[in-house]
Length: 367
Image (cartoon, one colour):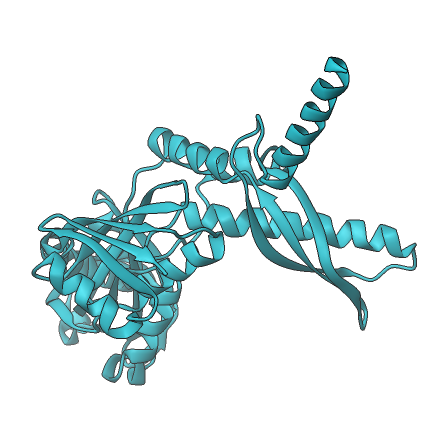
């Protein structure tokens, strides 16, 4: 009788563990994900397995991006891709399809995937600490002309990269600008924000052969370039600094002289922006933001999107996520913690309640 009772207790305990998703592999949370794979004339069960496997990868990517969170994540650091995304089985406990069907030439599926969030979060932080230094993302776009004609050589951007290469910035190639972009840069800023930029550098450079070139007895050809640069904050579209400089390129080959002139002018002007950008980065108030009762990766992602929509928020990072409570470090152009919490409640008052506010901390509960 005792053995039977003990066996029943073991069965009940095992059932409870499965029901509440506890066990030796760590805490897990279900993540909603979808996937589409090419349709093949194989068994229906085989197609379901294929689309479910892809959904698992998509769910893990979604969760990983949340734990890598800052104002935006442009791409995975190499070690995160190597140790997490290339080994999805190590972070997924179980999954199942909620719906699946053929969609033209594709097979579509939606799934619930249990991701081991505790292990995933710990691993991401470990990799960040060992191999990842957080840098400020800056979107760099330019318009350059040579003798009045549009040039696509990108010499100006090369000069800006040289000027800022030793600073803690990630420079994102923003491509070539039109004149309209320079006059109304709203669309450029919006694009930069989607790519994770905190600041945008807009450069205009023009190079022309010097009129005195024909009078020189030397075969070297002088080219004069002038550059104008604006640096814009992605959060509020405001110009935080501008600069201008010029440079003369000299070479026996005209095209090389043009390159030297454009690169040099933009390097000089770009160097002038380094200190104002650094001051802008460091001027934002930094405080801790704790959100309790998050419960799901989707709500954690929603919380991050709320902060992205606040123009005052320069940047943020997810420091810790345990027991459905999220802790963020936030940098914002805001005077007090009370002002920050008021802006969230003003727009999303039905979603949160305030638990605690100090000069360095805001604590809320997700309702």
